[in-house]
Length: 200
Image: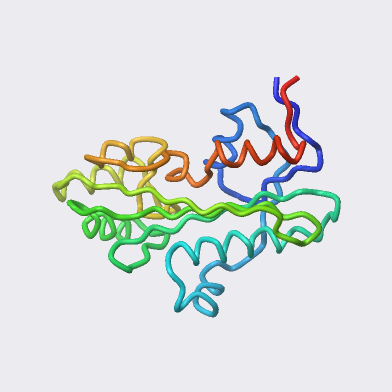
């Protein structure tokens, strides 16, 4: 059994990250950050790389809640999909999702994932990882069928790799957990080091 400190919080509204942790025996308190990601990107991320944007937003999420409890530890993460310098935000509509997937097909794009731990309003650990994904030469009808099936409207890149999204790719290089938005091995190792989780 995994014992988790009551002072450990996941600063995220992502069900995927919550389930990813749960599947590894880690269930913790959830504290959703109240930030406007699109507004922050417009104001502060214009000249940043995809990896830098992901880190900036992860830190913004954690810092927005870290003062709620100075003794607590807050995990936050963000993910940015990028192809040849273009950032692919969450599509929000099926039309946009189809458009994004048509742009990504037959090409190799990058998923950038940033993860941080905040304590007492300070970043005490950060990790940046990336994975390269090559999408198959999908037909238009395959793309439409996928979007109608999965409705990946809140996913960076317009696919849900944790579900049917794997059917879209011919090659993947890198940590699959990074693609899902949370580098579990690196994060778990740090949580053990901090004494926030332990085997009982």
